[in-house]
Structure formats: C-alpha cells, structure tokens
Length: 113
Image (tube, rainbow, N blue to C red; front, top):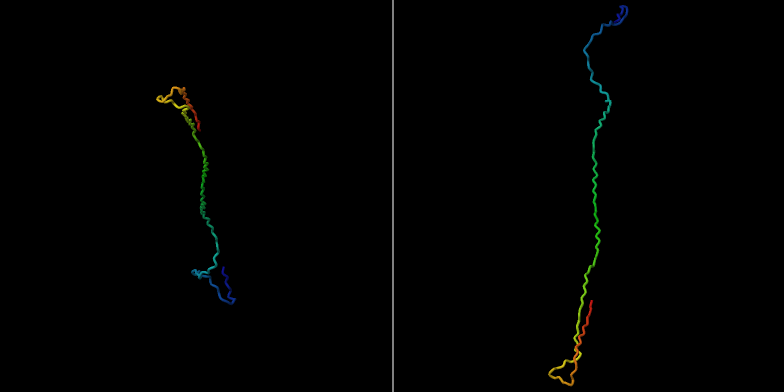
C-alpha cells in the first residue's frame, strides 16, 4: 500500500503511520437552528349574562256607585170637629127657642207623601 521509493530518488522516506490517541479541539458553536413545537391547550371561559324579568300586574279598579233606597208611604189623617150650632144649656133653656141639634162630623183625610 505504501509505495517505496527507490534509492535513486532524493527525498525523505515515509514510514508507516502510527495510530495516536484522539485529540479534541474546543467546540465550535454554530447559531442554533430553531424548531417550533405547538401545544394546543383547551380553555373554557364561561360568559354569563344575567337577565331579570319584572312582571307588573296592573289592577284596574272600577268604582261603581249605586244608590239603593227604600220607600215608604205615610197616610196621615187630620180630623176637624166643627160645632155648627151651640149646644143648649139645659139650665138656661128657653122653651120657645127650642131647636133640634145636629152634630156634623167632618172627617178630612190628608194624604201626604
């Protein structure tokens, strides 16, 4: 594998290589490559819109007026007692003036309402 040079040529002679321990140089840092990992997180946000209902009951009051009455009838009776002639006085009676006596009763009814 190695070529031997003939003595005719001028120059150094090569020996077979030797394995030396591995050497490490300080690392060379390159700019980082960027990778994107996306995580999806499900978040529930409740939105509460309260509502209030007011029921208004309007009572319509109808005032109705009645005028009941009772009725009665009053009958009044008014009497007149009229003396049309003078009554004779038995003690002072004159025989020649003797006249018959008539009593008249007049009843008048007054109907008032």
